[in-house]
Image (cartoon, rainbow, N blue to C red; front, side, top):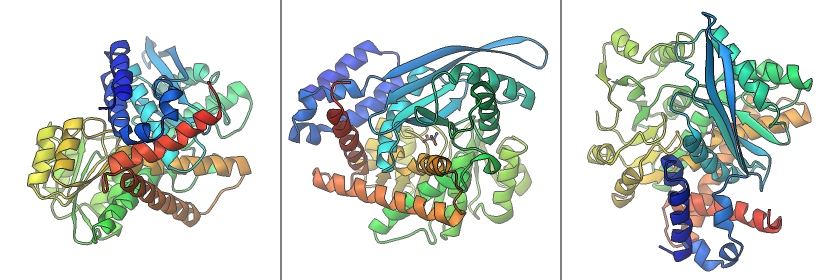
Length: 447
Ligand code: GLU
């Protein structure tokens, strides 16, 4: 590896040795930048990599709230304002018991590159809390969200930092947080995205990450002279991204054969569409139930505690659950079962070992920062609509989203070609995204 890159990584590992997901994300990006760093000495001369891996600001705060029994609960909240070279910080909020500073730094770091790829003026940020919404009443979720926003509001704003949803944060949570922000600041502005349609939200925002992932995967298939018709598609997760990815795969003629959640997976080789897809939507979005209920209702196989990889044959895999959900063995099982395309709907779902298995077996592999950028891209479109005080029709938003995903695919493929690794979307995505941010940082001086 290039000496400059390895010394930056070594120092980072010493300094933040316990932040393993952040180190994993940083290593993947920096390794693939070798040809750019060598071709353009200005980046090393200006210590761009050292600056890029250090967040501009990390805010961490106490979130006290009262549960339904009147007991005081205390969680930790964070906002990582990672990079504002090309626009206000932008990125979601994750509420999940696994959340810690290292996970949010990984997500914030990925977001810098993802947002750059969208072509829209958005910097990178991420935030959240170790609060677990599972099993909490609406009242408890509202109490938590209000307390969380009471502190967060000091740090954000429509031109400063614009949070949105992620795992554990959907329309309900965004609503409670927006209400509290407005009450404290007395301003109605586009400070959050993923808002309700009656109060500044964009049409297609709920669908955007899943649709965008499938638009990107479709470009990957087209580059190999094929499409979704007749393809078996394995999807993990059953939340917002998985749900709308499945809907779009069905629309394009593919067969969705799996869904999963944190307790297990279901395999339905007849395809999850129509009334079965509606069942999952109701189960997950209204009843907040477990995916096992799908197996009970439709008489298909349920695999307790398992992820879907390798449980049946599939041509395409769309991991849409969470980070590090495909191990080396699971990647091999996908390859052995004939999988030729992997497109990441989640953030960093493949371990580095899994990525190596895919690349060495000539599987076309689309990394999350490119594949799932449709969500934040549509958040960017929501910001534009808010600034103009307009609301675009759904066809208009969907056409813009589609164009953005086609352009991201093109930018990744072209950068991969230009820097000597044709077909490698990992290198292509990192290089294309990096150049825009790094050049903006150079233009703005030592800040
Ligand atoms: N949480 C999503 C992501 O990982 C969306 C972020 C946003 O819309 O700001 O990109």
